[in-house]
Each structure stands twice: as C-alpha cells, then as structure tokens.
Length: 220
Image: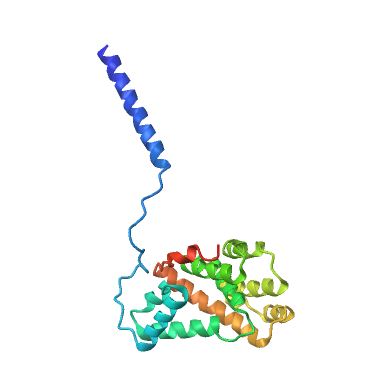
C-alpha cells in the first residue's frame, strides 16, 4: 500500500510539473523596464556643440525624439557632424531621386546586410513616405516580390549588386539604369546612397545599435 501511495504521489508531481511547463511555454517574456540601450558600447556623450544641440532639438520638434544612431555618434562631435552632414546631403538634399526612392535604396541594402537598426528605421520611412505599409514590409523581406516600376526595379537591382559584389559592377549595369530613365547624376546618387548604407549597416551591426521603439509603429 505504501509503495502504491508513493507511486501515485510521484505521478501527481510529474503531471503538475508538465502542466506548469505547458503554462510557461505560452507566457510572454517579461519586458524590461525603461528604454533599451542605444548600442553595446558604453561611451559617454560629449558636450554638444551649439549646432548639434540645435539639430537634436529640431529632431524632437519634428519627429518627437532624437534617432538613436545620432546618440550613438554623440561621444565624438566631429564624427557626429560628419555623419549627419553626409546623411542629410544624401537623403534630404535636392536630387533626381525622390526621398522615397532614396529610402527604398536604404532598405534594399539594409535587407541584404540584415541590419536591424536600418531596416526598422528606414522601413518605417518607406511606409510613411509611400503611404503603403505592404510595400514597406516587402522591401524589408524581399523587394523582388514587390510590384515595382521598371525604374525602381533597375535601381534596387543595381544597389543590391553593389552590396553583394561591387567589384563586379560593369558598364552594362550602369547602362541598365540609363535605359530605366536615370541621368548620370542620378546614377551617382544611387551609388552614393547604397555605399553610405553599406558603411552604416556594418557599423550598426558591429556595435549592436538599437532602433528607437517609435519606428516599429510608424506608418502602419
């Protein structure tokens, strides 16, 4: 009788543990309190120059926050100013490429490099500028599956080849852009944007830069 009772109690314990385990499988992991770190390195922010302080304030007024990539550079004002200057010139200055087209290049390159920060931030920009969350998601996942114009397909084909094998770019690749309607200056801009994001993707991934949480809901 004692052995039977012991066996019965052992069975109950096993069933109880299995039930608890099944319950745990369905539970969501606990969320961390407070904002996630900007990046993996613990670097102190340098004193902001007047120009950068004004730039950060403009970011807060326009979009409500300072992008984490800028905060990641903020330990060194010279590097931050150089990065911001190049970014603003490539992505916002007058160009034969629209702002949306430049963001599309950023996403296609970032998808090739699997850069979490840039896919989150520039995927959001594509959703907002296009007004089409499906397009934004397709570019992040696989731009080839998207319904794109001849112009945009040629543009992203070039940017992707640049990312995978830039040394293999030949005149036929540039000529494909000309046939799609791009000018010589446009081709420069496509190449410059693609090159910039290849650099930025690699730095972001190496330092584990984390996107602002707002990006994940923008344009959805």
